[in-house]
Amino acid sequence: MALIDFSFYSSIYSYNHLFLTVLSFLVSALIFLASMRKSKLKRVNLPPGPAGWPIVGNLFQFARSGKPFFKYVEDLRPIYGPIFTLKMGTRTMVILSDAKLVHEALIERGSIFSTRPRENPTRNIFSCNKFTVNAAVYGPVWRSLRRNLVQNMLSSSRIKEFQHVRDKAMDTLINRLKAEAKANDGVVWVLKNARFAVFCILLAMCFGIDMDDETNEKMDQVMKLVLITLDPRIDDYLPILSPFFSKQRKRALEVRKEQIDFMVPFFEKRRKMLQNPESDKTAISFSYLDTLFDLKVEGRKSGPSNEELVSLCSEFINGGTDTTATGIEWGVAQLITNPHVQAKLYDEIKQTVGDRAVAEKDIDRMPYLRAVVKELLRKHPPTYFSLTHAVSEPTTLAGYDIPTDVNVEIYLQAIGEDPKLWRNPEKFNPERFISGGEDADITGVKGVKMMPFGVGRRICPGLGMGTVHIQLMLARMVQEFEWSAYPPNSKIDLTEKLEFTVVMKNSLKAMVKPRA
Image (cartoon, rainbow, N blue to C red; front, side, top):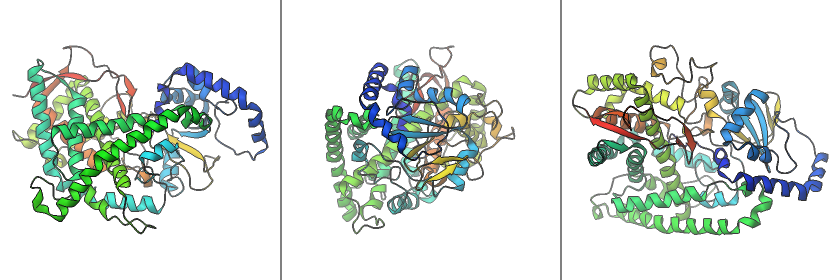
C-alpha cells in the first residue's frame, strides 16, 4: 500500500491528440458566447499559467504539444515557476513542484489541504461514492476507514503477523525465477514475477483464504479490468461531452457488476470460516476483511455493505501490487546498470546472514540495503504526481488564492531530483544516505526532499508494508542470483512510460546466474 500514490492526470496523453484538438475547437466555437458571462464573476488571484481557450482551457495546447502530461508540466516550470495554474476543461489545476511549498501546504496546513476534489461519476462507481481510504473526502468517513486500516492492519506488529505469508511468497518467487531461467537459457521477466509475488501476499492478507493459481489469475484479471475501465476520458475534463460516452458508462457498470459478483462469494466464505474455524484448515487466522465486517463508521448505524467491501478490498490489493512490482523492476534495472552497487549489496547480505535465506529480521542490520531502496524511491517514485489534493476552505499559498474547487497537483520528480536539495540528483547513488551526508525524512515531517508515499495527513498508510516488501524481495533476489543485462553486454534502457504506474518503456528482461 505504501506505494499507492498516483494521479490519473498524468496519463491524459494517451488520448488521440487529433481527436482532442478537434473537440477543443468545436466546443470552444459552440459555447464561446456563453463563456463570456463568466467575466462578470468575481475573479480570484490564481497562480500564473499559460492562457487558454474559453471553456477548454489549456487542453488545446496540451494536445498540440504531443507530449506526456508530466513533460508538458516540466516544460512550463522554467516559465511559470514552482507554482502555476493549468485549466484543463472544467478542471483547474494548481501544480506544485517546490519542496517548501509542499511542506507548507501538506504538513504545516495539512488540515486545509487534505481533502479530495470532485470526480467523474464513473469513478465514484468503483469507489462506492468515495467510500475508500484514498478517495474519501477529509472527514468522519475517511477517519474511520484510515484508522481501521492503520491500527488493525498496517501497524508494525500486525505486519509482522503476516511474515509467514511473505516467506512463502518469497520462496515461490525464487522458485519461479529458477524455473523460468532454466527454461529460457538464464533469461527472466522481472516485472511479471515480482507482480505475482506481491499480488499473492496481498490476496492472502486481504481475504485470509488460500487461493489456487487459477483463482489468483482470475482475481488479477478482474482487478486489471477495473483499472483499464478507470482510464481517463475526455469527458472527465469536458462534462458537456458526457452524452457521447454513454457506452463507456454502461461498460463501467458491467465491469463493476462483474467485480462484485466475483468477489462477494469470498466474503461469504470468510464469514463462514470465522463462524466455524475448523471448516478450512488452510485459512489464515486474520485478514483485512475481518476488520471490515463490523466496522463502525462515524455517522453510520451499520457496517459496510458488500459493495463497499468490494471497493475497500480492491483498494488494498490494487494499491500495493503494481506500485511495489514496478519498484522491484526499477531496482533490478539500476542494480544491473550499477554493478558496483549490486556487488556491495550482495556483500552486505553475505556478511549479515551467511548461507541462510534473508529474513525480515535481518533488514534492520542491512543499512546499505535500506539505502539502496531509499535511493530507488527517490529516483523512481511510482507515479509522476501524488494523489490529487483539494482544500476544504478557500485559502492562499505563496500569495495566490486556492479556491475549494481547484485540484492541487504535486509533481514528485521535480522534488526528488531538485539540485537544490540533492547533489548530482540524476545519479543513482545509495552512498548519499550512508557516507554522503545526505538524508531525507520520507514522511516529510522534518522537511520534504522526496515523497514517494505522499506526505502529511493523506500520506499512504501502507508506507511501512510497501517498504518491507521491496527490501525483502530485492534482498532475496540479489542473494540468489547475479543479475546482468539481456542481451549480454547491452545497455539497460531506463526510458519511462506511464501505465497504472511509471514503468520501464521496455519491460525488463534480465539474465540471472545462480550464486555459488
